[in-house]
Image (cartoon, rainbow, N blue to C red):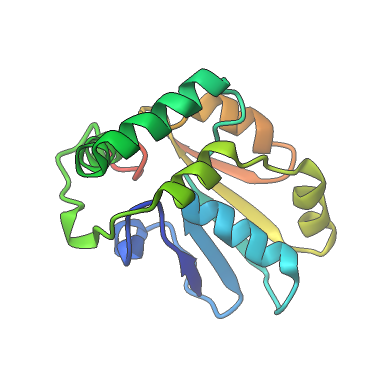
Length: 170
C-alpha cells in the first residue's frame, strides 16, 4: 500500500489501521494526502485496484475571503496555525498528533485550499476499474463532510463515521 500524508503530518497512517486496505495495489491518502493519492492514481504509472480517500481536503465551496484568511493566519504565525489545525483534526477526541508533526508550508496550504477536484478524473479512475473508497467523519471540523459526500457519492463507496472527526475517531 502507498500512503500519502495530510498537511503538516507524516507517518499518520497508523491512525487509520482499521480502515486501510493492506495491498500492494492500494493507494490511500488522508486530507491533503487524499489529493496527492488521487493525482498519483490519475497518473496511471502502476496498477491500482483501490484508491482510499480519508477526509479529503475539500474547500471548493469556500470563498476567496476564507482562503485568504487561512493564508494570512498561517503567514502571521505558522506554529499557532498548525497547533489549531491539529486540535481541529483530532476533535472530538483528545488524540495526540504531535508525534506525526511535520510542519507544512504556505505552498502546501495554498494547494489544498485551492484544489479543484475533477469529476472527470474520478470517472476516469472508475472506468479503469479502480475502486474508490471515501471515509468521512460526521463531526469533522476541517471539511464539510456532507458536501464532500454529495460530491464523491457518484464515484465512490462512502463510509460515513457519524461520530468521527477529521481523523475518523469519535
